[in-house]
Image (cartoon, rainbow over all chains, first blue to last red; front, top):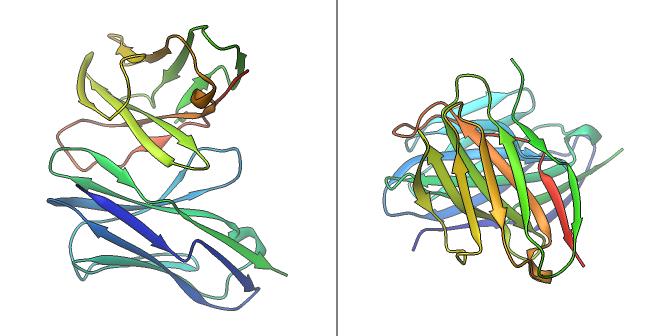
Length: 109
Length: 114
C-alpha cells in the first residue's frame, strides 16, 4: 500500500531561522511528488512537482528536493507569512494521489 | 484565469440527511477529484472523474457518490449523513487524466453534521 509520512509534525522557527521539512514515501511506482501549502480554512495551494530523483525546484525562500525514498522542503530565512501547513503527496502509476499528514510550520517574528 | 470554485462554502446538516456539494473546475480542466479532510485522517481521496466517467475511487462507503457533467462541473453527494462525515470537502481539478498534470484545489466546503 502506498504511504506518505511527514516529519516533524509541527515546527516552530524564529524569523530567519532556516530549516527543512521531510516527506518519506513508499509507492508502487512514482509518477510525481507534489508539495502544497495550506492555510487554515483554505484549500491547498500548489508549490512544486518533482518527477525523478535528483530533481530540485526553487521558489522564493523554498527549495524542494527529491531522492528515491524521500523529499525535503528547505525553507531559507523564513518569514511569519510562511506559517502554514505543508503537505506532501505522491501520485502512483494508477493515477491515485496519496497525501501525507502535513507539517504545521509556525514562524515567529 | 479563475480558479476552482466550490459551493456552498459552509453547510450544516443533521444526521440522516443527505447533501450535495458542487465544484466548477478551472476552465479547460477536464478532470475533477474530491477529497475529505479531517484533523485526524488528513486528506483522503474520494474519487476522480474525467469525461463524465469515474476513473478512480478511494476507500469510502457507497454513501459517497459523485458525478460529472459534460461541462466538467462535478457534484458530490453524501446520503444518510453521519457525525463522522463532518469535514472539509475539497475539490481539485487538473487538465487531463493520463498525465502528471498538477491538481489545483478549490477553497473547500465545510460540512458540519449535527
